[in-house]
View 1 (cartoon, rainbow, N blue to C red):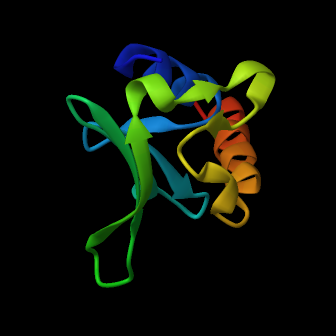
View 2 (tube, rainbow, N blue to C red):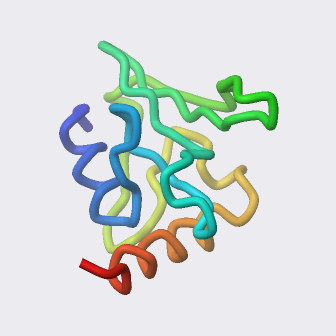
Length: 102
């Protein structure tokens, strides 16, 4: 996959661009990202924000190693399946986008 493919997958699955990165937020605080995909030149890193406000890298991979993502499935090769409740958070973000006032 490429940077653009990963960004397209993220935006189609409830992620939003916050601070220049595809990110997920808590429904109660939609402008504060808690998980983000840091898209670098050759790698993509999954980062989680600690309560102190610092970002901690929890996994990552090279673009060619990342795959999948069809029909709402998680991307393989990034370790997203190890993050508890990630799919629930993605669903909450999708719902918030659909039902948000315009």
